[in-house]
Length: 157
Image 1 (cartoon, rainbow, N blue to C red):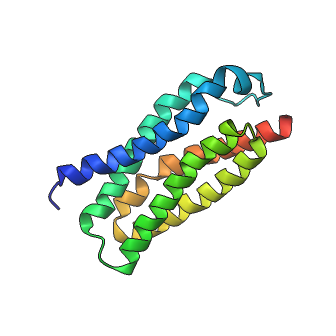
Image 2 (cartoon, rainbow, N blue to C red):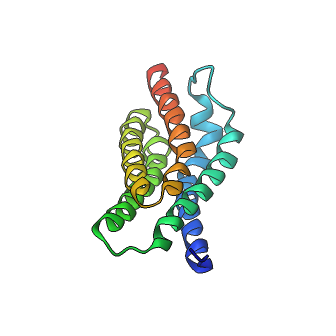
Image 3 (cartoon, helix red, strand yellow):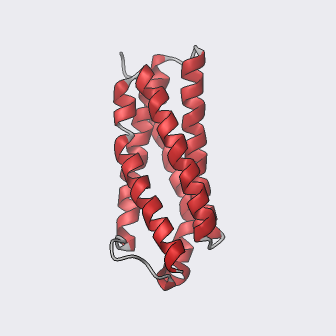
């Protein structure tokens, strides 16, 4: 399939914008509120999150592009892209719930929904383009770790 540069760039930008939106709630809270929380021993240092998320959003964008570039004509393709949008919205929402509201509990509820939406997206993407599903494996792995971290922060505080 031929590269459609416009779709490729738009796919990456859409995902990065979700990250930018989430960072509006996250970055101001890291030095004060987040730094004051009790965290488990396995919590990565704060500086790790930014580069990891940028890389994950790139992989997500490539994944979206692979599905979008095949065409969004049938019910399956439309549902796949819809689910991708849902999980991306939940991704940005998590930052608001956890950091914006300063609520590990609401963050935990949000990240569970996000994890389920990612899994559903992967399932739908797998039917359309297996590469698109496999590109989301690092994302669901990181969100799994983040969910465990979120739960631990809630339990410790």
